[in-house]
Structure formats: C-alpha cells, structure tokens
Image (cartoon, rainbow, N blue to C red; front, side):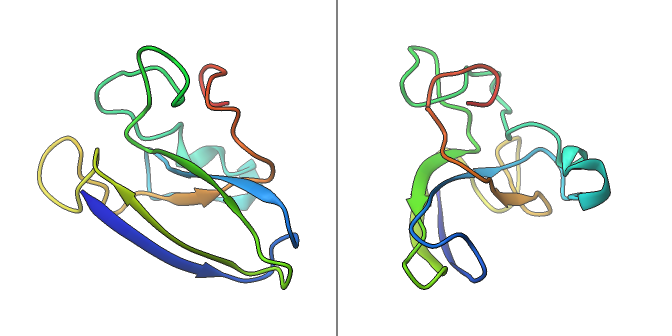
Length: 109
C-alpha cells in the first residue's frame, strides 16, 4: 500500500472534494483534464466503495477542505503501490475534483 500525504492550497473553504489516482500522468487543463484518463483501475472493478464489485484501485475517500482553503490529508490506499506491477502509480495523476464522490455512480461518481 501507499500512504499519500498532501497539503494543497487555494481550494474552496469547507468543501468536501473527491480525490483519485487517474490512469495517466497527463493532466492538461486545456482539455478539461480529460488527458488524465479515468480512475486508475487495473483490475476492472466497479467504481465506488458502495458497490458490490468496487472500488477502483484509484478510488479514495472524499476529503474536507479546511476553513482556510487548505486541504491537509493522510490517506492510506492498500490497493496500490509506487513501483512494479499493474497496481503501480508512479507517474500517474493524483486529482482533486470539484465536488464530492457519491461512491456508487458509474464510471466515476
């Protein structure tokens, strides 16, 4: 597994935001970030914690942004690793989405 520790500034204060690893390391704002691909999903699982056949390896719990607009979080994901094999995430995009994940809608919640 991987422990992801982050501190991100400039986010909407108090918002609950979705947080995922995506398929590629490309994250071009000119394409609406579509270049990052879908959620990292090497095992072809369904999206979300609330489905019987999920979650994607790149799915992680929603995170609450602080009142100061800073997201500080530590998230352990046991379904991924940094290097070696199909579950490796090195070089992939880590995305914070506007809005929260519902943990069940397909393909991305």
